[in-house]
Image (cartoon, rainbow, N blue to C red):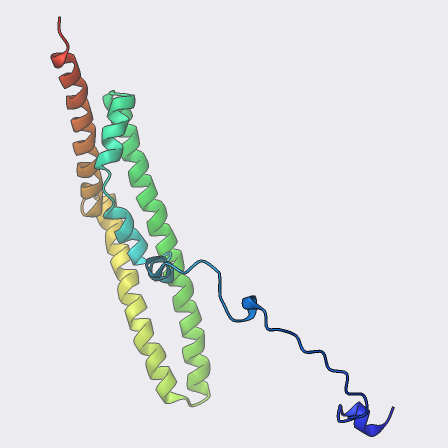
Length: 178
């Protein structure tokens, strides 16, 4: 083996296979990303997840539950479940922001030690946004404990649907001939 063949410059063996380009090389056949899903996943455990959950319309769920079991204790159990789900989302958000703040504090310290003032300023700006969101999560948690705020919306939405379901059951009875 000579130096030219080692370097790939040996022209004495000109056997080159020409391959036709494959469609897969140029055309992406994967499913397109849903941009809304990407936006939601950006803050998957943050404040926006709590807001998304709290803005869910539980009226239809309450309506269906009333048709299945028109018992007021069943209604209260389901409201309690909705509230517990809210607490889970609050805990997830608190953990998410605590982790982000610890990571940012490390980066701020190390970049400050390296003398990267502009990057430290950007990190401090991002940290202030995260602290603001974290404080909002803490406020929502306090309001939830005090049975105020987002919890009121959850209860009203579910109760409205449950009462509509009860009314629907009564209307069926009223509309049947005796």
